[in-house]
Image (cartoon, one colour):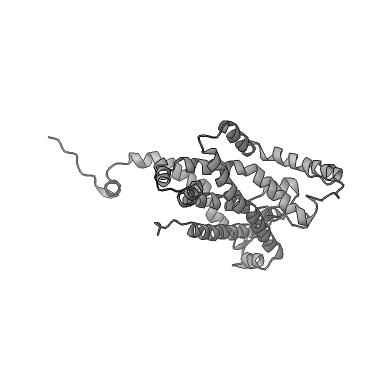
Length: 303
């Protein structure tokens, strides 16, 4: 019987530490190499850049926490945070509740034409954002928009839906609601359909009506899904860029300048250090808000 000679040297010790075979690590190596090149390295570079003063035309100068101090004392930065917070309050809570209710209705086997309602509700989500934004511009134009035309027929004054600070944010929130509600409904519907029917059958035998079943079975079992959706929606609202860029360019008077759109000003001014610091401050805000939401939506059996 021939036995293999134990590997010696540093390569042999590495092979023994890896379990004796390199091949599994060779197969997964491309992912880690790509992640290091296009994920980890840019992240570390941006983090280092956030402590620099650099406009791209000379060597970066280290200024410590100067960029962060500037942002934390900048009124435009806090206004962008407030705008994002307003949009979050206008979009996420109501959208989540309505999506759950509609998903419950669509999950009923007795509902006729379920395929039609599912298709109709999901269609806005798959329509390109730029196309939806152009429709919004036509609908809510102050002088020739369809909505103001209807108001004129009712002998009501025109409203500057996209040109006044009072109405610009609600109009932007309405666009996001119409565009993304299909995704919210799809996520909740998938989660509801995964709830075992035995729970509802047992509750029916105990005399629980539809409302009691919804409150004591559906809602508790949807907490993880709700937590996932709230975190994803929060990230989307904070990063929102295309919607205000197409509709209002952040105006009027920065009333629709979101946290994500605010980064454009640093790009236009080639203020790369401040832009990097802004990005990391937004990342910290997203992490903190996400942890709070997950804590609030945590189920009773989770630690």
